[in-house]
Image (cartoon, rainbow, N blue to C red):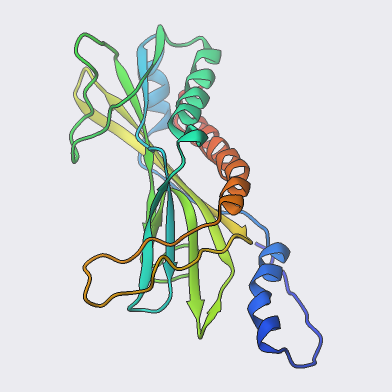
Length: 254
């Protein structure tokens, strides 16, 4: 990966200029960085799934993750609902469209409201049948995290922000996705693929109320409505790209 150097004049910066640096750094380094991993055999998947029925399920949910780490001891994190983004619908439509286009499956059916219970194999609704099930979930990376190299964990779709000496460092938008294939006849997992992508954003999180040492829960950061609207297109676009790439690696399209 090439490193982009940003040069500034040699005159001193005042406080306002220093605080504005993250915005310019984010714009100058707007590069998507991805890390991926796989635990299945695409050749075995290709052989065993041909002509079979397959169910497609998304457990991504309808929330956007927000996390602001100020110091090693203070942080704000939580989720905000973004149902209008139709995250689950977008993910399952992407997968089902790709699978149907291959004409290699007897049926491809999208189901809603299904998720795993701990590490158990997901169960289809009563009366529903399929040979295989694809489960799309949030994927989390951490220790060190791929964005800041910290011991914090970040996952799913969201915005991450860190502070240093009162300055907000370049913020990151991220998409972490895992897709696991289950053999419902054998009652076991055939493995999974995952990817975590992140890229700079100029959107800045604001404090949700400050850290309270007496509370067991940290406040949830706030985000302006206009900033939230601006995030929808880049995050959902990357979501589709990540899902397409992962399905392409699983041996399900050949």
